[in-house]
Picture: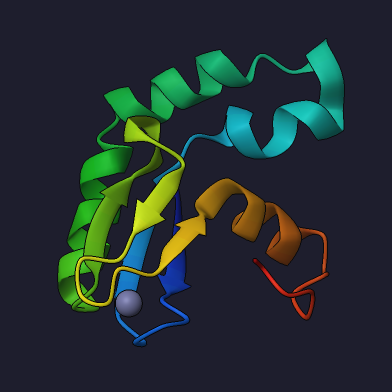
Length: 100
Ligand SMILES: [Zn+2]
């Protein structure tokens, strides 16, 4: 199953649903022992990205595909965030660390 992360803009509370390939999240944790590229390809072939898009619509969030760029500028308030840094921080349990 593809990974869709929820990101809430810290400037205006606008919500985004972000598709993140697993290799971006896990490769530096597991090293080369897991073929994440293959896993991502399978997810994408199975319609995993469309699934994240559907979740975005369902939760009234804006869909973002992180493969198009890791920096997101909020279309509503212009706040900028480095999404990968944000999600890695969340995943490693350091969510209280300031992002910028
Ligand atoms: Zn915003």
